[in-house]
Image (cartoon, rainbow, N blue to C red; front, side, top):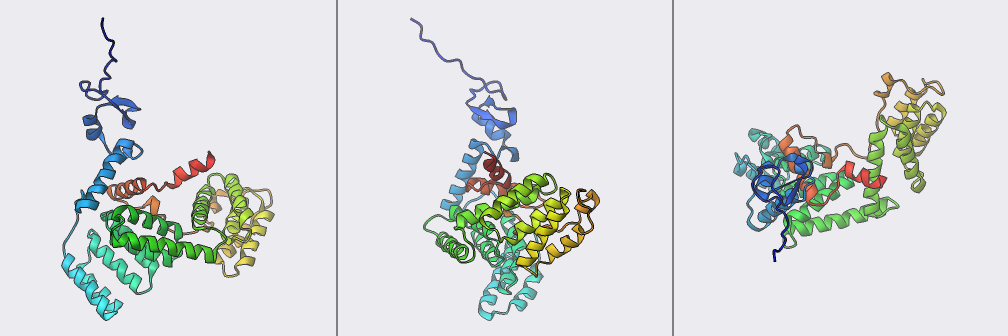
Length: 345
């Protein structure tokens, strides 16, 4: 009696080996493990096999310190000496002058030191781009991720600071000092949100990500954006930026009176909010029922929660940008687009 066997699935790529993996690049055709490895590129970020390989890479770094990144180590000792002298002298301006002798934006360590000095000089906004660059060049740079979270906290950019700490927790492991420091930083964020908002940390971060999504919709779908800002205002009726952005949505929809009302409400809540005042002057030139002309739409001033989006790393170098996105995917941090899709469901 013959025993029936299942037909072997041949790899759609090489046509020889047994296929057992669905390939995103080949419209979910079945391929073999060897071809899977050979074909991988930045478009595979959503593939479980790609992410599994990246997790193994991270685990290898945590246990051995080995990594696949090519680093520029020129002047590392000299830069380290500059930071050591800064720790003793407390003279940030002197350290900044000394560091410039080793200026090199391809050096992760130079970028890190530049950020540290700006942070020491109480200039966190200036520090953030340098820490961003440092972790772009070397995504496993734990000290840079921690200092980035410090700079972002000082700028009250909580979601970005939180994401940086989550990455640090994954990079360092429970026995590392950076792991403990990241845990402490997250507790600090929880206290900050409790003291300054009516929300928990997680609610606050989710709310800010939704705000960011609605903000991005203003020029494309002002009605949907308006609905989003109205939803945010239900739970926090005095949120200045939601009123201001709602006013811009109404101007795009030709609702002049409603736009002026919302912008005035934003100014009533915060008389120093010059962005709303500038937009109000622009809206005053409209006619009721006629949407703000396209020629003027590009002139409105946006009212964002925060300026740079860490999860949408804006490096012009695609290799650096991909490395950051991979790291966020590995740490379970959703992109803005993914979070938006979840909200629709």
